[in-house]
Length: 120
Image (cartoon, rainbow, N blue to C red; front, side, top):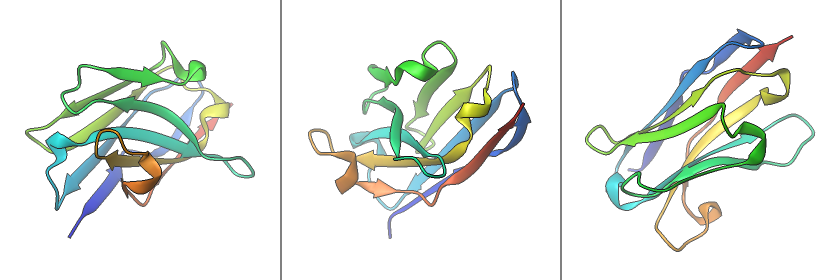
């Protein structure tokens, strides 16, 4: 059975940091691209960052470039999102996802989400 379980969310003051983790099981994680998405109340879900199977290629939405870093440890079947210099506008539910290369994330596996709240 496939599972993606996020952890590490919470309440932090603006300027602070959080590290999200997403543990995968039930599939061959190392052969899947992975990504982090977020959805704030009243807003559409957006892709925050993605990483290739090997970790050699990463992408970020402009609003988090220079502040967030995505990484993965295929030996631990885990993808991370290090979030620094957090801003109130980063407040959202953060989801991790995994997808076969060449497919859209919407068709892949998704976690249940973890809440990140940044206070001003």
